[in-house]
Length: 125
Image 1 (spheres, rainbow, N blue to C red):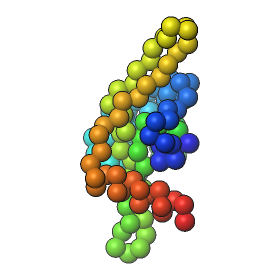
Image 2: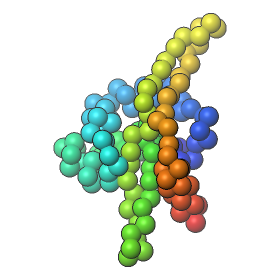
Image 3: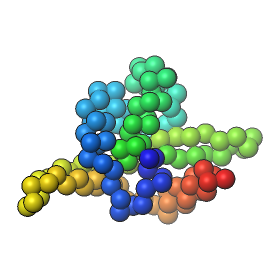
């Protein structure tokens, strides 16, 4: 499930996060995303085949590690970019001996919140 469809208090499944972090290409993508990029830009920067990059980006989005942004261009078409949406991933064993997952997220500016809301509206239409 892409990050945009998750409530801010909802966390992805622990296994989704572990699988994404276990994937060297996914880690390379997280390390390379110093600014929002399209899938093609990510593929070029990371040296990963475009078809594989689409799958890796989806895996990271499902693990709630990427924020998907839709930018409307002047010609009416849109471009989807991705940005890292985590600051830290914390995994702890609680008192009942169950693993707990917490993802610390960057704070969002008003412009980022508005862009995210617009992206959600565009996807819903």
